[in-house]
Structure formats: structure tokens, C-alpha cells
Image (tube, rainbow, N blue to C red; front, side, top):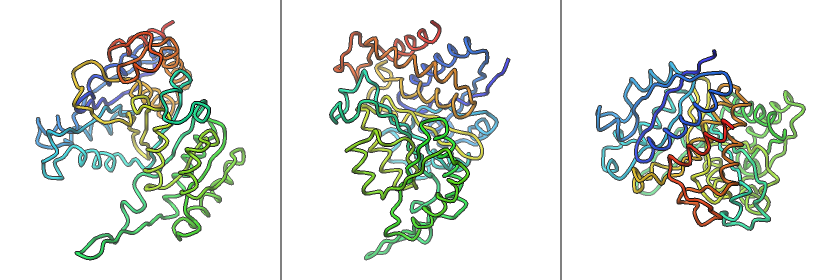
Length: 355
């Protein structure tokens, strides 16, 4: 029997609760799909600092790099906000991504039919939305040199190399081949030299994927179109700062960040995590929504292991639970027939897989 080795990083706040439910669902799908999981827990974030004095212990890096994938909960909280910057949980996460070599952030935005009224936009606009933002994660203006400031001026540099653009473009086109075979590349080529190179390289790379339809859009127009007609998009390919903004905008189409997963992938090991934070204010109360983490586990099966049938089973079970009216507290006002605890929601989804 095939066995996949998973590093579990539960983290802080609600992280342990939501990871436990994802593991419950993974075990359920493994039992009916003919493979197995081997889990190893590792520390990162505030809990790691409290125990080791480091938000990212070397042991966590070693465990992750020896695994097939990382399933990650959430980190951070006010308790650690006043630590020196290098000791804060968020600094550990940035180091972690660098150590694992992840360069692509994959963030789907899906509007479930059962929750179409949860969106702040009209149901007629968001019904049926299913898009994927593919964001370059370790280049662009956040990392370019020179950067700095003095009393009167601050400066940053937006830089992309051909190699960086090629590898993120390949990610987008490969994902598009498994979806509706459409890629919209987002840039600012009418103003920025770096975007002109981006567009040229994306066009070159597209020639290797003749089945995929490639279009281009300026980032300001893309921000508008995401609100005006989000259904027009399938895969949105973009750089770091544009992707940072657009992926957050896209996440709110669904109406709740408690529903949306993400993946950070690259040359080594992929990290699969919900887009929401650690929510320390509700930690331990059993009311956190585990769906985003369970959906992240589905992404792990799909993109890390190629277990498409198993991923589809999880996605279908999530939709089934929502269609039957099961809701966690954050979604209770949207056609809830029964308000569930974190653990109850995980069990309901796991049970639907087994049926």
C-alpha cells in the first residue's frame, strides 16, 4: 500500500483544532482509496518560541524536508507581538517558506451554491465562481534590491528574471490544463518595464501549452473585473505584489475566509494551509470552521500526490455537508439547519466520504 509522509504543523490559536479535523478527513479518504498516511508533528510559531526560544526550530525544517508535504494550521497572536522581529511567529513562517523553496502561491476562490448569499456581492454575480490565483511568491518588489529609506525618501525595486517568470508561468499553465484551460496573465505592461518582460516571457511559455487559451489584463482592470464579473476567470497568473492584493480581493467573493484553502509550492516540498489566521480569540472553544483546512488537505492530495479521485471525494463531501445545512458558528446566519462544533463538522465531512 502506498504511504504518504505528512508533516503536521498545527501552530497557534485554532491551528491544532482545525488540523485535527483535516487529519480525520484524510484518514477517512485514505481508507476508501487504497493508500495510507504517516504523520509527524513539528513546531512553528508562538508555541515553538515558548518551548525552544525559536519560532522555527531546525528540527521542523528537517522534518518538513523529509516529508512528502506539509499540512499547516495557523500561527501568531497578540501574546508574541512584542517580541523582537526575528523571534515573532511571522518571521518563522517567512524563513520556513525560504527553506522549503516555495515560489508559487496557489489560492482558489470558490463560491459554494449553498453559501451564495454569504458574499457581499449579489448572488447573480458570484454564483458559480471557481477561479485560481497563481501568485509568484519570492520575487518582485518585496524582495528586489536596492531598497531602503531615509528621512525624506523611501525606495524599493521591482525585479523579475526570465527564469522566475518561466517557472511560475509553467505552474499556471499546468494547473489550467486540469481546469478549464484558460490563463489570464495580470501585469502592468503599459507602464512597467518589468511587466513588459513578464508578458513577453509568459507568451513564450504559452507556446508549450497550445490547448490553453492565454489572455492578458492590466492589474487595475483585473481588480475591477474581479468584482464586476468574476466568472470570466479560470487561472489568474501574476507577480508578488499584484497577487498579494488580488488574491485577498478574490477571497472575499465567497463571503468567508473560513472556507478557502491555499498552497505554497516549489522545487522541494509544498505547504498546504487555510488562508485565515490563528484566531486566538476563539481558540479552544470548538467553534472554528475547519473547512478551509480540510479543503487545503484536498489540495495537497491533488497537487502534491496526484490523488485526484481522493481530492474529489473530499470536495464533494464538503459540498454535501453544506448542502445539508450544516454550518459552523461563523456561517450560522446563512441557511443553517444545524450549527456544528469544529469537531462535529469534521466528522460530518469524514462520514460523507465513507458513504
